[in-house]
Length: 405
Image 1 (tube, rainbow, N blue to C red):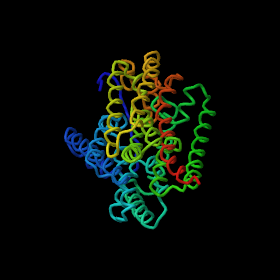
Image 2 (cartoon, rainbow, N blue to C red):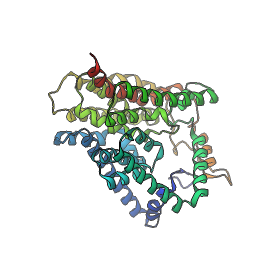
Image 3 (cartoon, rainbow, N blue to C red):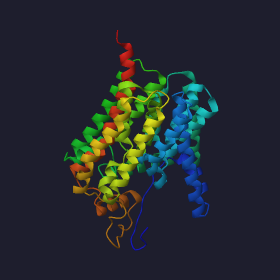
Image 4 (cartoon, rainbow, N blue to C red):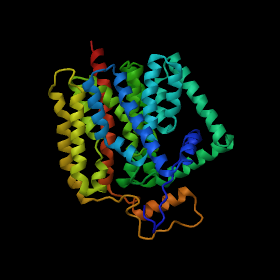
């Protein structure tokens, strides 16, 4: 924090979270930070344990590998460093899937409520609504969410204001460097605003249609169908940051512990694409060695998680992918350094007077250079999205092979 300039980072979340954040706000700041950090760490552990439980994996080695993957994964460490609620939501999704499967009503409702703290991630749970237990758990969680929203957010008028503010905040950064959506990446490659927005809508519709069609064609079960929906999620929502990719740890952990053959090799490639902070290579060039080494640690974690079966050539996949990608991404990032907020703000920066939070945020991003077009930045942000495509193929491939006559 630089006291010589204005620095505003707005957060737009549902009113249902206000009781939690309000309670934290009443505490001394150092105490609130420690409590929130502990909650995030607990959520991270719950996410990893629940993901393994979904895969019916109880080996100590798998748990150790999952914890190592959590430490090395860029989206997860970004969540912890930035204090992002996405980690709470991702843990809620993982625990909800487990509770639905085990038909534990109270736990399922609570997990659904936690997932809804970030609605753009919780929407993936729609893919799991296949049985009465899941529907009932989700309905109870949705009712609790609605009640908290009306109570804490000022009724229907407050809910409308939240939707309005969400739209304003989305427009303030829809094409900026920090967005990992297809629309923002298309814009970075030079597409006009209207075309980039159209590409985003087209990708969203295609992601939903393809996920539904593949789920039916491959006869995916409730669990695998939802894992596929999580892999498709970044293409289907209009707002997705680097730390939101933490939800991909749910299918990554499940497959890293159980997949074999080609599916395992594809999962390893997906881990290298999703778990490395590729854009960070451009934003923090001095840290490129650290970023690549964390990717190496994630690849090691992938191998450890699969040691229940004999190690195969598929375990080489994340290392080979990491090496090949780093040989391209590191020089590209050094040739096209990217700004970070708030470091790139001009000295003594002052926000426009009387502007609301969304307008101030948009102005800050322009002042910091986050709204510049650079195809290299778009390419780096496209890598995790490519990882989600590979992950989706890894989920579906074993089922398609099983259906072959």
